[in-house]
Amino acid sequence: MPPIIQVKNLSKNFKEIKAVNDLSFTVPAGQVYGFLGQNGAGKSTTIRMLLTLITPTSGSIEIFGMDLFHHRKEILRQTGAIIEKPDLYKYLTALENLRLFASMSGIKPTEKKLMDQLAMVGLAERAKSKIKTYSQGMKQRLGIATALVHDPKLIILDEPTNGLDPQGIADVRKLIIHLSRDLGKTLVISSHMLGEMELIADSMLIISSGKKVVEGRCEDLLNPDKVQVEIQTDDKEKTIGIIRETKWGNSLIPVTNGMVLLEMKKAQIPELNRWLTEKGVNIFSLRPKHSLEDFFLSLTKN
Amino acid sequence: MFQLLKIELYKIFKRPRTFIAFAVITAIILLIQVALKFGGEEYVGIMMSGVNSAFEAPTHEILNGYFACFMILNLLLVHVPILVALVAGDMISGEANMGTLRLLVSKPISRTELLMVKFTAACIYTLLLLLWVAILSLFFSMFLFGTNQIFVPREDQANIIATSDIMWRYAAAFVFAGIGLITVGSLSFMLSAFADNSIGPIVATVCVIIVFTILTQMEIPFYNSIKPYLFTRHMLGWKGFFYVKGVDGVTENGSVENLPGIIRSALVLLAYSVLFLSAAIWYFKRKNILT
Image (tube, rainbow over all chains, first blue to last red; front, side):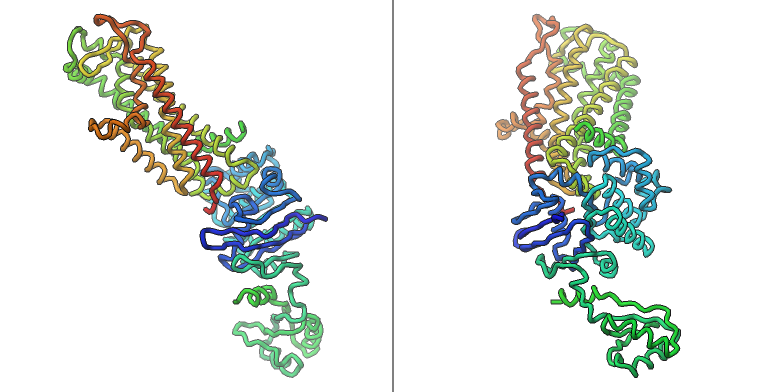
């Protein structure tokens, strides 16, 4: 399947500042593509160039196999986006905002379709409230609804979980997975929430100072051999004592909360689980912890 | 395009701010009409005292609906541009300020289309505001004060226009005023394309109007050479429809003293509008949307 987005040697200079520097990447069709980088790395500038908000200094962007600047309308008709915090018309209701943005994308959805869209992001009950009465999280969810209202093939979400509470974050995660897995949409998501990205991204691009650091499938990029494992048991001290007697004894990482943390090979996790159970430790949870975070920090710390 | 225009008009008329201008216009016109109703004869007496009295007319004949409208337009058409700037100056910068501009620009509409639609919506708002001025100042004044021939005061004389010769002059004057207000709207709109907040373009438009009006009125020879280029000077061209030709004090019906001058002023105003709109499109097409 041809890639949905193909960016080649993209650069953007703001006077002397090189916000994006010779960046090339490819977004495969039907995937959730994570776009990561520190603040000021050039993520938003790149996303704005993908949406024609900013003109590149040099380089090319092809979306759906077409040059973005020659086929802008055709491409944007099939693209939905939220850019940073989605500000909408505060003096209009959610329903009115949604109808307005649908019209701007060239469609006239029925009220039922609009209500379904609002229900999908949990805002059906507040459909007729003005946006000025909405919390940041609600605005964020409505922003996602406006990005989806014209049923685009490509969805670009810049920090989609900004301002959301944990339940909201989980809902957005479910929605993204649904859009990708069930509806076959391609999603480009820029986020600082590495734990969340690790759960949903198929591929990722990490940039730093406007340049590509690494790009590829998550399973290839994240080191499968070394992960941090967080264990919650009924007796932390007993668990640490048992682990000290094993080959993982030197891998324990001191932490002050009720968890036990150690670094180990991913493949050995079942073995550790069995060992602790045999020793009479009641395990409440055992999970690899933020390996993407370590990977990201190791790549971008310099 | 029509769908987009409907959206823009919907947005304009859903904002409470839009109706401030209509409320202000209503309040000012009603205040003037009340003042003329209860103290109009005294006012007319003072005003006519400077006119070389080749004619004798009772004050109650001079103070009629047509005259009231002429007085209101004289007082008001300097200030209506400020109300036009309130909306036109907010058309693009207001979207940037709200954060909705990036959503609009990332939709499948060209930037030129977006600006043309927004400009058209601003023009429609301006013309509706002017229509409201016309309804209140002309028709409501006719209702309050009745109709009669109109005395148009000039420096040391007055033109007298017969009742049957008035309405077309008002229609033409309002069309001309519309062209003038659209020029102000275009200036405000252009400044709005350059800015990322609404206050700047609105204040800047008002400042330009104030400075240009002062320069227009200043009788200093140094500034005379630039006066023909000040659009505010041409905005006063609507009065020309009430300056008539006459022989031996008898007005020639249907005549206009300086029609070529009025047409020239209208063309200058239209040229300014095109210039301001073109500059806005040229800049906006190249603008990086960062807000």
